Length: 219
Length: 219
DNA sequence: GACTCACAGATTGTATAAAATCTACGGTGA
DNA sequence: TCACCGTAGATTTTATACAATCTGTGAGTC
Image (cartoon, protein in one colour):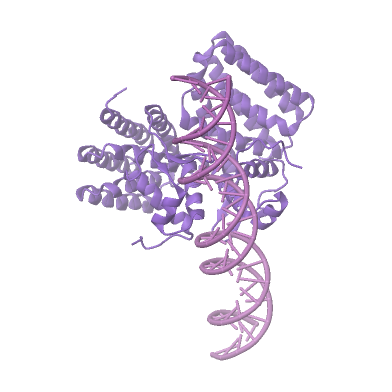
């Protein structure tokens, strides 16, 4: 009943499964996650569950109150804007450092990811969409050589994924994102790095606007 | 033998004590931390030690390899620059959002922290220096309303503390920081927020330069 | 009637012990 | 001599059991 087990430890596997469950709405914001129940659900003891919850707290998915438990964190409008502000600030900086170092193989890798992205959209595979989108963005920054920023952006992309799934990913917005990704590849291949950076900001802001519109309080 | 126990759980207490031990050099970079040994040292079982190590991994202090153990993370030049770039990028943004909302009580709070800062420097209390410095910076951003950025900056300040302690905090640099903090308070009180932001960048860059000089490879 | 306190149930936190995994060493064979 | 394999020891990971903490309910008192 479980995925093809590619993790070194049970804890790591539970992290992935729990994160997915939160992302796809199985545990809505505000839900209290009981260690005992989760342990039984996944057929393990409470120890790996505890460790998974702590990891997810570090990633911002849950809030842990000592002796009370873990609560799936709320998605405040405040934090949406903060997260997208951060992305608009950090991602162009990474791209500027990474893109000039691209080899042909890096660009080919981007093409490959873009292909899988298109396939996922065509298939309407919402679960895959967020993961491949994050993979694409991270591939853009592969050569940036900014380790701390990288780990921050990984977390930001995960949070973005969670937010965007709230709106159940209307296919239209996904199509726009697909085109914008293609344009990003084109600009990088052409060596128009500054232009690519500006377009990346535009791309991130477009996703934010879509999200805010669906949240019903465009700001 | 332990501090006045102000934590809700043992794990949280161990996190603090382990972090302090890494900060003050008791566990140099590259050291392998064995759960068993740590548990005995602190007189607890291995469970809270494990959870503390995972927390410290999220904070960037150690690197955990499954089934191998936790290693105190190295301080690469690459990451020094990344961390200070991030600070120079994120902290002014927080200040710009926070400072205009300051009440008299906020400024008074800054004065109080500054007083303790001066006392710690006069007493040559290196251990306190980093903590109070971080407290001061965070107080500057108290009204920023940027929750995600806040948690990131908390981690960045902790990492900065670790780096700066490597150089054993020459008192001269500490005096400069003290004067710059005073200037920051003055500018905020005068309502010169843009100027305060520029000065904050200058302050952060000054700390970086000092650090890089001591590391022997000014870049 | 409102407040305080104590107890019971539930849940989390920690200790102890068993299982799984890794590393290093030594033997065996080509 | 070198490479390969298996075993032993050490270390981490997970399970089970116990202790501590919190929450809510109800009796008792002012």
